[in-house]
Image (cartoon, rainbow, N blue to C red; front, side, top):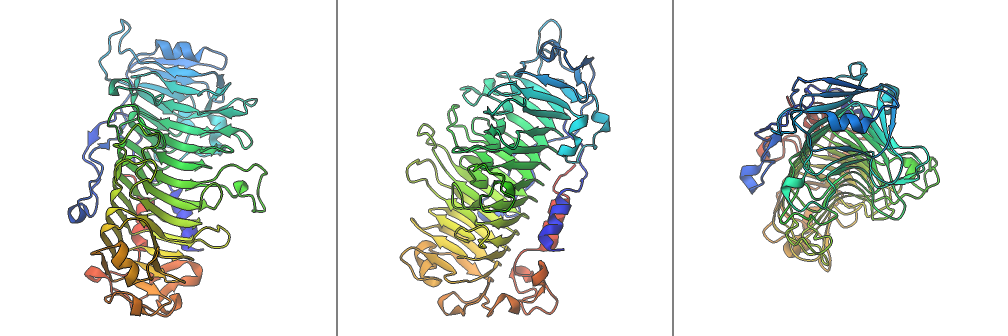
Length: 548
């Protein structure tokens, strides 16, 4: 079994963490190099411990009025839906009361759950479509959401629900809408929302623009399965947020969409100065099924518009760790899996910036290209993309003929403070493609990759040192292992074996990319570590990316 196949099984394992109750903010997970490059990690972290319910249990059976139950619930109540029951409508989570007289104190939770919750896999175990018969189904009958939050609604926990479209609906704009996206004051934004072990999906032939609109604050999405989010001629997302301040914790979910599986930005926030912030994205599996790929034998016949797996256009203090990203090809865009940009999408939010992002201990595979970092959008100018760290990741099968694309590991322009360190990269095109304005304060160390035809190449510059001098002034470039070309055009203090076979992997042909004890490059990196990714650390992050 190849290493990347092992990763798929590991990411599906349950890991120890109690599910969400009170969204208390506690100190965040630290960025591993925050002192070295000024990178700021998420400044708050949502405590996912369970808060017991103290109120009534309101039972709602198939055919009952779910909205009436939502309207009468107060803090501490549990709304328990019939397991296997179906509730059709556009239901609204109201700004809740904490007592029958209508006063509100902001404490206590309203839980909306399937009556079969005790029969589901426990907290910290991702749900799957096979569990659907045990869930309570909430289905939209039209283009609107199955469930949405009223402005200012807060302290709701959704557990064991299936959110979907009624069978005769051919298109929906979204299934779970946490914020309309046009709120102009923070007081109007829904907050303290938990989505726990929910199955949110369209159907294989209908258009679904969005699984979850994440325009809220203090929100958790965990152990859920979001799929069949796709549209022809327009972008679609499993999760998309642009007008919510955060913090957001997105942990241990399967996320599937044809456009961007996950996107922050893409529309201008209506709240002045807002940047989605303090985002933890850990232990997720982002993928696009081959049934959407027009030249694949499994193609299902509908040309959904395929773009990227993970994209930031306006976000800050983001940790992306222990995830599997796979299957992204040339279609509506050029097949880059991961994009970090700063985009003033509609021209009304010039503060839009992506900054302080750490991308570590992930696997990215089976894609047309790797990472695209764009400092400034030429025609949608906002701030500058800066302080990005890409550390200890495996990029495998990037740009093979199956996925087409440029086969480039990193495409970059006009950025500041970017660190690329200890990555193992198996790509068919350039290691780096540079264009536009220079990139300042860049560190490129301890990486392992084949050179291929051009290696590190910028527009109108020779490959190697010529590109580094023109596009990366003052770059720290050392202890890299670049296979397939002599080092005469590149800086010293790096290694240039003739081929990947000369590196000394444990088992290159079977996908074990650890360096063997006999490798001449064992412990040859900075601080005596192996060059390339620490595969054991990636496995550990994927198994244990959730924390108590």
